[in-house]
Image (cartoon, rainbow, N blue to C red; front, side, top):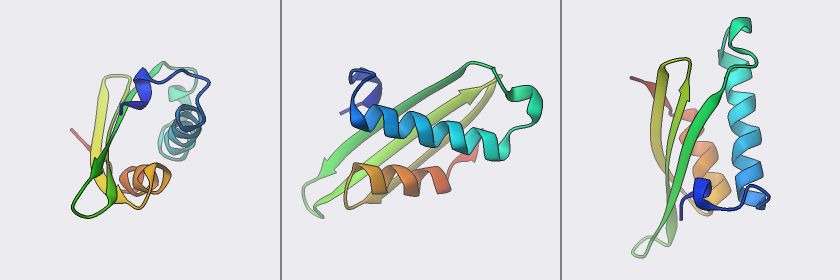
Length: 88
């Protein structure tokens, strides 16, 4: 499942969007406010471990951060992934 393919009114999409906004606000300079943010979030259920894998990509003003992590559900996997984003 890719959250960007989900309707924007879906609970998971809104959760990811809100957390990304908070992540950007905590790290970006003031001039980054009101700048378009592009993001892609994908989830895969891992059959062997019964965990969810999350891959996240965030683009802001030509900067790119990516990360991946596991969690017991989509929200936990996404939050873990946000903690481990690294720039490219």
